[in-house]
Structure formats: C-alpha cells, structure tokens
Amino acid sequence: MPSNHTSMGVTFIGCGAAVPETIVSNDDLAEVVDTSDEWISSRTGIRQRHLCHDRESLAGLATQAAQQALAMAGVAAVDVDLIVLATSSAEDLFGSACQIQARLGATKAVAFDLTAACSGFLFGVVTAAQFLRSGVYRNVLVIGADLLSRWVDWSDRNTCVLFGDGAGAVLMQGSGDGDRLLGFEIKSDGTQNACLNLAFKPELRELLPGAILTQGKYHYITMNGKEVYRFAINRVPDAIDKVIHQAQLTSTDIDWLILHQANQRIMDAVAERLHISAKKVISNVAKYGNTSAASIPIALNEAVRSGKIKPGDTIATSGFGAGLSWGAAILKWGK
Ligand code: ACO
Image (cartoon, rainbow, N blue to C red; front, side, top):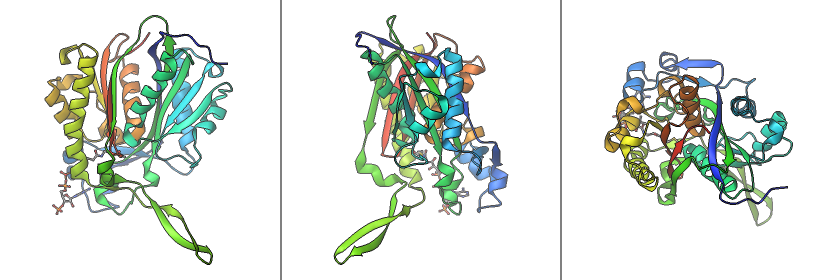
C-alpha cells in the first residue's frame, strides 16, 4: 500500500544504460544511401550508431539499463514502487513497461509507458517526481528506451543517418532530507506537430456495408529537419534559462549541461546562448547518434561512471523533439 507522507524531496541515486551490439559507422551507411562520413559528421557530429539486431529487444535493453541503475542505487527490484518507461517504439502498443517489470522481478511496482518522443525521459523524471514528492512512492525507475531503427526509412538519407538505438535508466528515490530536483519546465506545441511524425498509416477496410474501418501500419519517421533545428535552438535555451532562474541559480552555477543528443551543432548553439562553457557540455552523440528518449540517461550514465559527474554536481538537462515537445530541469546528482 502506498504510504502518505508529505514534504518529501527527490534524489537521483542510480543510473544505467545498454546499447545494441551492432555498430554501424557513417562509412557503412554510405553503402546504404547516398551520403558520406564528411556530410554526417560535419552537420550532426555523429560518427556511428548502435542498431538493434533480431535477437535484441527494447524490453531486454531497458531491463539491463534498469538493473544497472538499481545496483548503483543499492535498491532491490522488489522495492521498486513505480516504473515509468519513456518510449516511442514500444514492442506492444498496449505498453512495454510491464514486460520490464516482469523481467526485473519488480513484483510490487506499477509500470506504464509514457510517450513524448525525445522529451520522454525528461517528462518521465518530472512525472516520477510528483509521486515521490507526494510521498506516495519511495523508489521509482525512469527508463528512456527507443529502437527508432525499426521506424526509419533506410532509403531516406535525410533521416536514417540521424538515429541510433539504446536504453538508459535512473533510479529516483524519495528523501526527507532535501530535494535534488531544483526546477523543471515541460512544454508542448501541437501546432508544429507535422514537423516530426511516426504516424499511423490507415488502410480502409469495409467490414460491413457502410462500416468502413481503418486498419494498417505506421509510416516511417518523417521530419522537417530545418524546422526542428530552429525550434530546438530557440525553445531549449529559453526553457533552461527559466529553470536556472526557478532554482535561484545563474548559468555559472551549472556544472554540466546534458541536452538530448540530437545534433552536436544544437548542443553547441544552446551552450553558447546560455554562456555555458563547451567544457561543461556532456556529449556522446558521435558514438550513439540520436537515441531519442534514451539519449539523456545514456549520456548521464557515461558521465557518472567515468567520474566526470560527481555527487553534488548541478546538472542542467533538456529534452526536445516530436510533439513538438520540450522541457528542462535542474538537478543535483546523488544523495
Ligand atoms: N547525406 C548527404 N546529403 C544529405 C543528407 C545526407 N545524409 N541528408 C540531407 N542531405 C542533403 C539535402 O538533400 C540537401 O541537399 P540539397 O541542398 O541539394 O537539397 C543538403 O544536404 C542540405 O540539407 P539541409 O536540410 O540544409 O541540412 P541541414 O544543415 O539543415 O542539416 C539536419 C540537416 C542534420 C537534419 C538538421 O536540420 C538537424 O539536425 N535538424 C534537427 C533534427 C533533430 O534534432 N531532431 C530531433 C528530434 S528527433 C525526435 O524527437 C524523435
């Protein structure tokens, strides 16, 4: 049964990540579509990506990432109260979170999917914080996982070079001793929805005379890259500025900037607008490409495990993407 304490804070005490085995370089991709390592790396910073093969799965990668986060946090799977899976590529439209719950043996946890494309992990963290702050739950796993390689048109060089597959996770724990989520802002603008879609592709089927149903599959990802780029470099700095202010900090107080890893040029432009030194920008887009909801926790995990991010460090983070949706948060790592 949920407890009902109030005035609880949020801590971020564990992280993990998992990516598929198969690595595809830009040169490899140049054998699939008319592109080059020079074009991809100069426009995006991406040099390679990990792509899921037929024996790997979203639930499998997400479970590995979650297990690492639990181990780092020293929390047993049976003590997890809630699992939020941020994904746009669930293996079951009814949701994939429950498969992860079963694989983890998190028997007490309630589990559900949350879809907000590349903003999904951040939206998941903010969602989890509400349950923790209210005291309803104590241990929440927020997982960002996406296998967009399944939904990319591998003959469309405008999109296929951008994406990679992977999963990342954090364990958030309620705390009576301070709140490490110092500010957040999450936003949507559906008027720009057509900029980036993975849309249903209806096929008409007349079930009975006059009863025409729509059945079908999904279109591949379509994207207006220039519009998304413009949107990101305008909205993201504003959102981060706002949360820095909310946290009663200035940009010089930020130790690390972890943006959704879509494009190195976006990260550089955002850091410049915020007057945050390039040395503070955590970037691994070169190795993984855009892993959508997984990109922020994969980057966080690498930076924590390499010792770059230390307990007590202040992190500004921002996710942005389809919806269009975006958000930012300021958090302090560790207990
Ligand atoms: N290889 C070679 N040439 C290419 C490729 C490629 N892979 N892709 C496009 N081109 C060509 C285009 O056809 C165009 O040629 P043309 O001038 O003859 O028509 C030329 O390169 C220039 O294309 P632009 O669109 O001007 O390239 P731009 O500099 O804008 O970069 C990019 C494109 C990288 C997609 C950029 O717009 C971008 O990063 N946008 C943001 C995408 C993003 O961040 N999405 C995140 C959200 S994802 C989510 O939420 C799921």
